[in-house]
Amino acid sequence: QVQLVESGGGLVQPGGSLRLSCAASGIIFRLYDMGWYRQAPGKQREMIAVIPTGGSTNYADSVKGRFTISRDNAKNTVYLQMNSLKPDDTAVYYCNAVSSTNRRYVYWGQGTQVTVSP
Image (cartoon, rainbow, N blue to C red; front, side, top):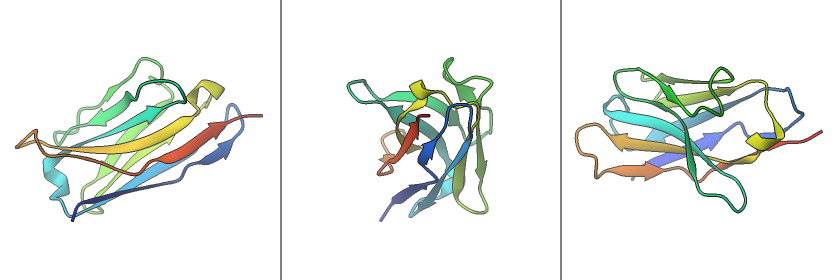
């Protein structure tokens, strides 16, 4: 059974930082491209950051220079370090895993709420 479990969300003031974690089980983690997405109320889910098996990262323009995605294959975990947070970053953040060998295998976490408010 595949599980992606996010943690680290919460309430933070504008300008603050949070670090999200996503622990994966049931997959060969090193063979999966990992990503973070978010969905704000009334909006579509959007890609925030991805880190493929090869390690080269990609970010949405809205978070470039503020967010950093990383992965630890030994711990089956992907991280999202979020700095200089803004109210517009308020959303539910989801972890995503896509098999690099068969793109049909796609998994999502349950999401973690991030709220940026004074």
